[in-house]
Length: 628
Image (cartoon, rainbow, N blue to C red; front, side):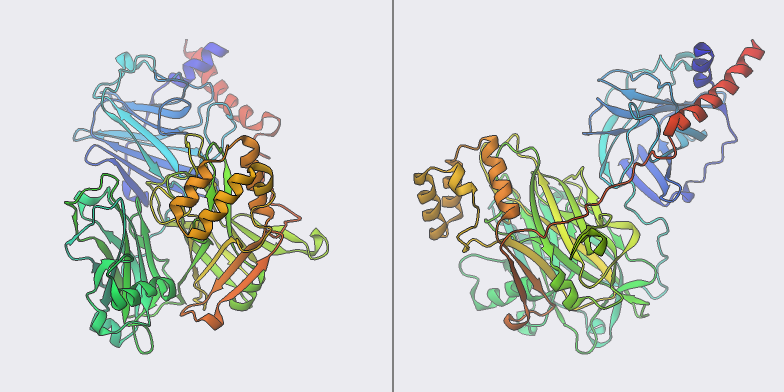
């Protein structure tokens, strides 16, 4: 029976080739002109469909990798032979050689064809299969897709005779479950305006934050318009240097400041520069983009209102340039396009920035595998700003820098079944435990998330510094760290941001870490450095510490359980309307933590999934036996 089952796996499929690629709403050019991936997914059915369109008449491969390399990857290899027969085999790579065919075939061929020198294969699989050993789960995390092809089919259609791909290979990060399944059609009256810098000379510093002030177009100022789509405009030669854009609506500017364009901080910026930079902390976030992101289309019933009577006429764009080689020849004209309609939609969108304050008080020690930093919107904050029916989160952008490896947006709600004044953690709003710094997309959530007044929103960022010799501090540089997320929601409310930081003026701050892990001399040196206000001095003092595993654990415990301050910032903040709360004992404990359901429960119990798969093989095997 094992021989028959193996033969069943090797049978070709003679299919009525009729692959309509337009039925796949999501696409990615893995290698432009040579390899294009199409896909769609169904969360309710827990399934995903793929189609690959590759410039070859030989075999093609696609895989899910843990790191972007071949080892431990879940791979399919398929082809269409000269007789029009399509083949597809589910495999698992243990190394950098031809991966063997799996005993369980969970990638199912739907169709295959060749036309004009291109091979198209359509196939599907469940997001979670019963083959725990050789299939990778498809989740909301960033997937590392690997791909390959060869211009020849395997010899005699033998799956063990797949020729080497040579240089026809690559990897790409993709959010497989983060796209819109139905992209709204553009309104018939769609117009656009651009916000871009004008051929600026980027400073040779390794990190530059550049602030530019603009006046909205006259037709937008005079009548409220409704933004339905935003898209980055990046000078192709500067793709490696443009790190992010943040664009804010400003109420504190006037027409005399329009056209200002200079570094956001530093000597010589003057009063004008200070007013422009002030918009970053006081303005209303209109749009955000980060490296690896693409265009963003609002849902069909949602738009971002801009302009019109009583609304801001001016915007400031903050551009982060990453210039690790400190080049002096970078000239840039990048920015963003805004597409709008005159027709109001059902819901007006807003953006909530959530996370840890960008501050050197965020200390990430070296040698840590999963060090964690938190930032939150407190229950008092959401009670004060969120209406009774709540808000609905529909998209999100997660953001850390180079040592960030995972982020989770926790959703916490009071629940009496969790004890007196108990708190229950709901399903995370967003989670990416395979975060890729170079692929920071705004993702549409699979379902709307209803956040109610009194809920707690908590961002958790995970960092891996096992290859670091020194500490990493919070800051604006790419080599420093951030812990932020940008939640898009409706209806729009008077809340701009929530952020947390360590209450360093509290004598209990960073205790017992300071007492247990530092010598008296090290404590004095760190205190002196902190008083000086020099980030470099603080960093040097911290790097003099012996960062043993116990010291790392002590700092983590001190941060989680030590005094923290949460700030709740409305739109157009003033000193008197910014809410702050002190939590002397750290994060609010969660009595009932969220327990993710077993995705295989009811599917693979008692070998149910294996039974179905093996029954299918048995039927084919019996047929082969009769034919033989």
